[in-house]
Image 1 (tube, rainbow, N blue to C red):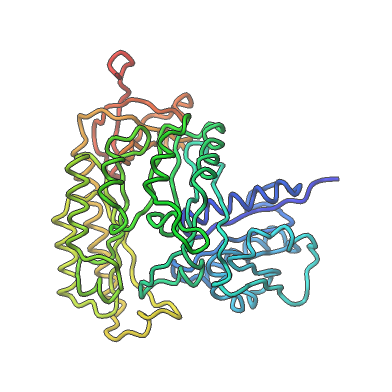
Image 2 (tube, helix red, strand yellow; image 1 turned 90 degrees about the horizontal axis):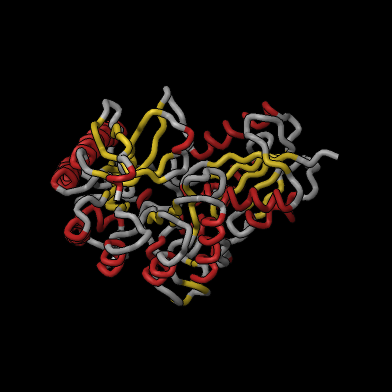
Length: 440
């Protein structure tokens, strides 16, 4: 008898991808075969996001696509949007089951009977009862794995629904995460990306602080078999000088930090209830660059937050323009139900939000190109990936310079010493391999 087939689709962040991968392993252990989303399956699992715009529209479209491939399939929706809006999702034609934050990792128990019911089944408990940390990591892209080390958030930023969707901050034990890193290393993966909702707050279990993020970083630095460990995103108030100093002399942690800023205006930071002022952000960037001049620094920024005047935006623009950063992730503010910001006065017109977003996207390209050009002529180690496009393959240096070279299957998942040669029109760096005699 042929095994039942399951297909997955993930919306949103790296944390969602790690959790989808772990849910996939639950299905594999239960005897299911995984198949591509655009093929026939018995079960489709859609992992949703509440941060991106048009969550309802995206969810409906993916459900419709699944049913096009397999009209009688069992459709299950999990993830942040499923926790926040279960009734809304239950009304989408074709959805059979909705699982909230606490229930998604018990999916096999809920899904054993694939009989479609007239009414959508919803398992969705109060978010304050979601207090268990469930480990997860992605496997599939052999080059890089996202390892979940923390979940939830105790912060109360006025624009954010994540605490409502994922609950309070909680983490795994260091020894358990180290064991997972060793499993990942044994699978042949060369790079681990640490992920979570607020990873700098690592160390809380059962509501009490047991460890610090620096303790985890030091333990993971001793894991043999992994070439690189990358910190995905960390709040500036939690990126301590101790962590920066350790990464600067680390064996495995790479010189790349992604620090959310959200606004370069202290007025707007206050309205957002961020836990720092822009002066602290400046201190962090300057300290990083003093120890690691070639470090890549990425920045999250939100435009069009309620109350953001043109002067506030220009303040942010100039602040970013003057700082030694490498790229921006630009988010256009959109109202979220059940957030304080949605009730604030001073809504910014949509056209202005769009214009401000375009300005920062252009600034991001300028910053990225300047950072890449600063690396030309230098040598670096690049981890090449399996993609091929127009005869080229791509990879990333330790400090997150995206490079391309003529496709060679022998380079896939290999760390290769290269020389950075030229920035292309598409803002990638052409490289040439360094002969082994010169590499070390």
